[in-house]
Picture 1 (cartoon, one colour):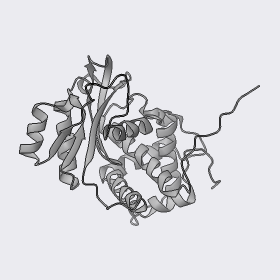
Picture 2: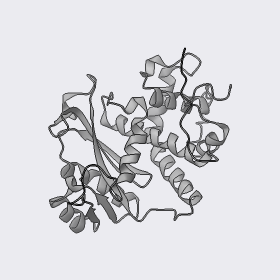
Picture 3: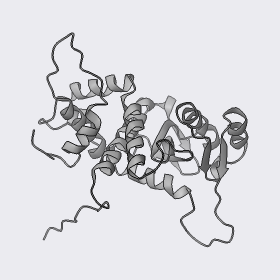
Picture 4: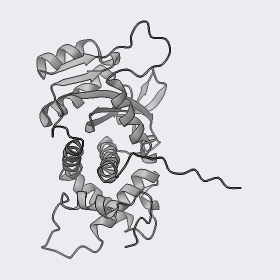
Amino acid sequence: MPPDRYPSDLTDEQWELIESLLPEPNTGGRPEKHPRREIVNAILYVVRSGCPWRYLPTDLPPWQTVYWYFQQWEAVGVTERLLTELRIKARRQAGRADEPSAGIIDSQSVKGADTVGRGSRGYDAGKKVNGRKRFIITDMLITVAVLGASWRDRDGAKTTLLSAYLTTPIRHVFADQGFAGRLVDWARDTLRTTLEIVRKPADQPGFSVISRRWVVERTLAWLTACRRLARDDERDPAVSEAIIRWAAIAGMTRRLTREGPAQRQSRYICD
């Protein structure tokens, strides 16, 4: 297999991080025809480039095969396991504890394509967006939920907070003022979790980076660098959540294998 055929392809070091976490091949039937590394490369190509599954390049496995693996792995929780293991490795590499003690929550409204059904979309009057809303809790991405854009932050966040409560030791979450109100009491009484509202100082003129909240804003920016996440094209919100997790997995593997500070790609100017 040619190395780095596409910018989204995994390097040898990145593949080593993922290979052992994938399910074992089924030995009771026909041997797998396509290398698993190629399947993962094809999924990441779709996530990064934003192309439809049917438009995968012909030097990658057939799109039907790639999408079948995408569905099967999602059904057995592969992306959640990858996220957890890669997050632990990244925290160890940074000299931090395996599990975070606190997280930061935020939401992002994105336009929905015509493939997004009426039952899972909505209109965010504040952002003037017709589509879906993504809720994430991050230190490095911890959990994600995708709902209609009409969901208010304080209502839609309950699913994400509950998921973090059930799967992590996080009991302190920072949020912006859109999550203030009854949600703070619900998190305290139901989840025994402190939801701390980080507000902009009253005397602060214009824009300024706000403590804690910049972490989740940065994560959302990293995720939407993947063109598949520039808007929501998925009919099923669960597929949207899986795409977000794959984007985070790609980012974590790059973080774990880079030798120095991240650098932007060189800009090419055509004369």
